[in-house]
Amino acid sequence: MTAHVLLVEDAPDVQLIVADLLQGHGHRIVVTGDGNEALRLVTEQRFDLMILDLMLPGQSGFEVCRTARERGFDGGILMLTARAHVDDRIEGLSTGADDYLIKPFDSRELLARASALLRRVGKAPLTPVLHFQFGDIAVDFQRRTVSRAGKPLNLTAKELLLLRQLIDHRGQVLSREHLLSRIWHDQQFIGARTVDVHVAWLRQKLEENPQSPRYIKTVRGEGYSFQP
Image (cartoon, rainbow, N blue to C red):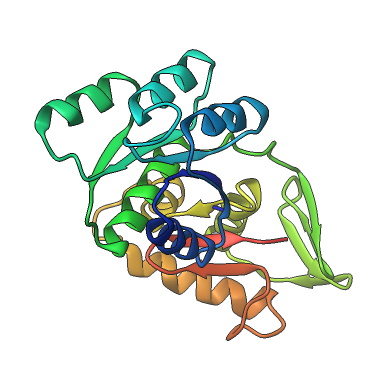
């Protein structure tokens, strides 16, 4: 899932670390170090996630969080601060934050928490389609057919269901757990490796170079994403 993230942090070193980390995973980042500017930005733009320091010039992170929620901000809010007291965490959550991470932090934990928030908040799924074209591949879900340059491709029922999930959520990252629940309905003894195997088979049939796929991307530690 490519997300639009607002980073509200006044420490240049933390700005650099967090922005580089999230940009490296494909997210679009807007950075500000001022609480008043943060509120202007969330009013004017649509963000999926706000990573918010508490100690800010202008308005505090608590005030930014509370006001943003009052103005209708419905994205995820991850508070990032050196204030570790339980009262601060409780106040942050009560003003509308979804999660709270204490400085100094491990980059892997920050990324994991941000990714979990994005999955939880989610983006509205795109309208399911009956017909879809990518490259020279044509998919007709109504007739349950797939062809390349007009020549039929033989997909199994599970492969077609997998492709349907990927296309219906194109541009988003789908976890293995999501795909298991939608395609295999959490059947006993069916594990995440089953998803990986079916993705590999699907790539063999649809990608020009399955070892370097153009459409069905692996997002390390997250799952799979269809990029038309």
